[in-house]
Amino acid sequence: MVKLGIAGACGKMGRRIYELALQDKDIEVALLLEKKGTPLIGKEIGRMKVSSNLDGLFLTDVLVDFTLPEACEEHLDYAAKYKKAVVLGTTGLSQAQMGKVEEISKLVPVVFSPNMSIGVNVLFSALGEIAGRLGPDYSVEIVEAHHKWKKDSPSGTAKKMAEAIQRVTKKDIPVHSVRLGDIFGDHTVIFCGNSERIEIKHQAHSRDLFAVGAVKAAKWVSSRPAGLYSMQDVLNG
Image 1 (cartoon, rainbow, N blue to C red):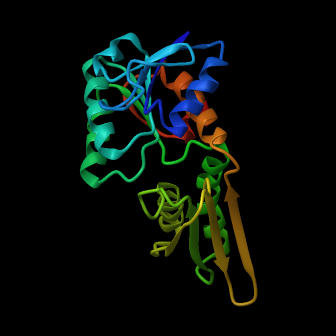
Image 2 (tube, rainbow, N blue to C red; image 1 turned 180 degrees about the horizontal axis):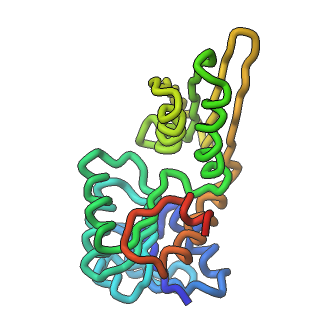
């Protein structure tokens, strides 16, 4: 049984992770975390009260964090303090904050991915191979679209897609961002040659695909040694 803590439990992602975790016989939700001042602090969501006390992490095995970069820094400190594993889906991290993730991963196991979707992580592996097979005569650009409230741009997923292609082509890959309405997340990679075009598109239809991946990662990382892992590691077992 994996004891799970969820940071940002009152947010849309946090709530969905909580709902799915409650349905998993291998998980016990031990902590619902929110920042101080959140109206639901001390009130119950489902079966548990929401807390702002980070010392509650000692009750958990794994912390799942889909919050903001500033908040996740403090959460990482407490995870290291209590030697708890982390599943980190927070995007928009600065270079300094990424350095902190790497530092903490020397003390505890951390799964970090800008996108926990199984389909997207398969694409991360495939895009470099496609770019290599097509060769230098094909230009590549990426278009990503998210809801109007998403703060970071371009998305972490688009950046990682671009990195996968750049490793093969050694070229900068332009990324175009759209922020409209309530789009969960669309990513289109366009390979264009002189007489043909290939488009590879991933569309998120709900937050469930991210939440399912996060729960899967939490169960996987709970028994791992300290280190920095990706969803590729989770999917490879």
